[in-house]
Length: 501
Image (tube, rainbow, N blue to C red; front, side, top):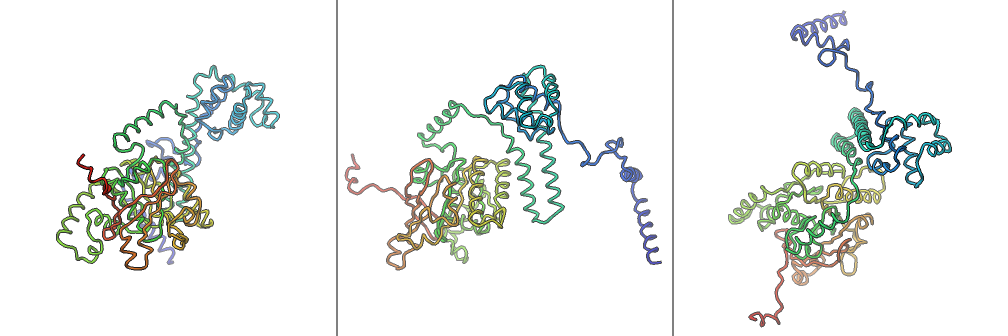
């Protein structure tokens, strides 16, 4: 009886809801339940999984026939499509054999192709000699070979998009991973479709040299270095020529040495001084802490007093003034903890599309979450370093990534960091274009007298530079402002008496 009453109540509820719906909505719902509701109320719409995948078999046959007619077009076509871009498996097999014949320098004609297919045991897979003859006869001439190839490539991209979307749907329904990881992975799959479709050709040396000469003139005029950004530190820019696009720069140091402060000073000089967009990815510090440090550094206010609330009215005035200046600068901070490199790349891509991007700073490498936590730690770090380099080339932006040093730097004879002190993986040194160390001798002194002797002295050690010299840069460390500044170059005393001349 109870079950009967529940059924009656449900039926009554459905009728009541149906009565409240407009008549057009009720009829549309009935058509949808019957499966006869199509676009405009016409033919039924087939489910997505039952629809035919995008393909143009005639264009695929035209590509193959063009190669058989004129083998020279193979070079142009090979830059546009790959064997897996063909929807028909028999066309994939035939195209792969045509490419192999062309790469080996052999002639391509119907007889040679048929003989090769027969020898390899693939003649029946492509439909026999008659099928190849039909493909050849289907194309009157090879003048439009690249046009056919573009059609094949476009259809292949649509199929790749369908496959990626299917994987995204399956992962979303599975929900075994974190949602933000799924979103980042989904974006990476979509971007990979375009990344693997680059049809860029080799550039003539003439166009490359034109850019070289323009950059040389800009440097001789002491203008902004084209192809990179200036750090704002005079001696560092002189030695390295700034931070160049597509380069991975590793800035390493032991804890509390000032590497985050130095990286933030560079980001400040780029975004606030040069008004160029910069992204600071902080995996260690929260954005409020970074903002406090940036504000105190720019306004030259003691950070400890700001935290204690004991700043003067003059300090507060400078902070307010600098805050207005910094807020209008193109500096972006991402302090989401536990970022993977896929997520960092996604954030950078979006920012570059919307605002442009001149510099990426990541603090720091060992805190980047690996894609596969089960891999050995050394292999994880090696993969991260390799992908950092790939990201810098893909986005054509310098990537300044901070890294930790192992304890060997503290037990060495002079406490100076070296390349073999890079923590957890030698692949960091291998993949980086520039490796810099922050070194402050004051940190290692144990007596007040020795600390006072080297107080404020800092060095940026260029231990590796793929396209330039190595050396040391002297800077002044202002601890109360967490700031590095250029040293003033004073004339030698013995030459001062000749200054009147």
